[in-house]
Length: 323
Ligand code: ADP
Ligand code: DP6
Image 1 (cartoon, rainbow, N blue to C red):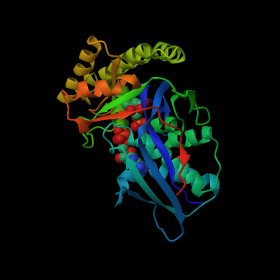
Image 2: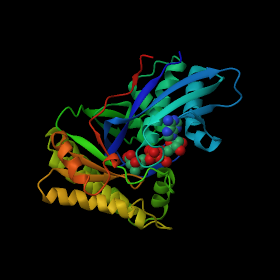
Image 3: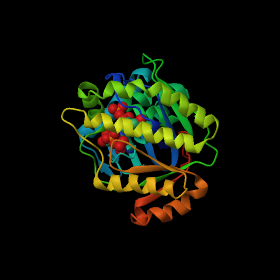
Image 4: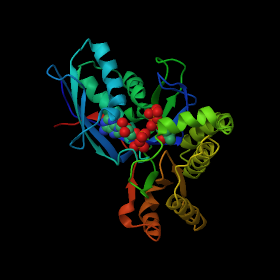
């Protein structure tokens, strides 16, 4: 039955950057993220025999076919499983800027997988939902779960999926510094492909990931936010270093991103717990204690407008909405 499903975005603390298998979206490395409450997507899928093509209405606007590729991939998999031939009407609302490095693809494709599962009455397990969301967008595999989540890279379609690591029910949060809401020039998909294919730094990135991941899991178990933040920050910097080595080279950083990163370093010198991470876009996310968030927000307001700074706490797993 057609129902609204909500999935929250997640931000990786150990980044997914590069695919072993492009078609199946099997990554080169495990990744680990925190699901967040502040940003999410609501989606409803309706299979409709009168439609000739799948259609996506995103934030009230009918989307061009280019935006639909990832959506059709997920819908086709659902149709195949459920023996459905009808095309689908997909309605979706992003409570997150689209394609600005704020992980709209993660919440968007996870919500789609959940809503398509409802519409086809397939009753997929969370694990299978994660596998399905992964086929739409890799990071979406992690948005099926709340709190800290690890995506085990696996080697096949069957064993590449995410699972929960810790409910993050402790003093940790994230501040988003929105330096730019515009859509980015290089999508994460194209950016990671170019890096894998051409960057001499890519192997260096891969070489230290197992250590970063095991250190991160230890830090989470100890609820040691200083350690979580330090590992996440250096992991993100390594990922972004690979893009500078690509051919042609590129970066997601802007001058404002540098201002934000510097501000975080200054906060640290002032005794705050604050570390940054960045994704495939110019916005900067600050890992901090929930208990210090209000004070840090005030400090950041010395550099940015208050509307540019959004607080987020750990968020829940994918779920159905009542209406
Ligand atoms: P982001 O940093 O926002 O994740 P990406 O370039 O990785 O940016 O992904 C953006 C793409 O994800 C969009 O162009 C669209 O194809 C897809 N997407 C985003 N939101 C949704 C949604 N609610 N439903 C379906 N697809 C979505
Ligand atoms: C930098 O999941 O958007 O945010 O699998 O090609 O759709 P595709 O890529 P996507 O990449 C996310 C990259 C990242 C790091 C991360 O979220 O782990």
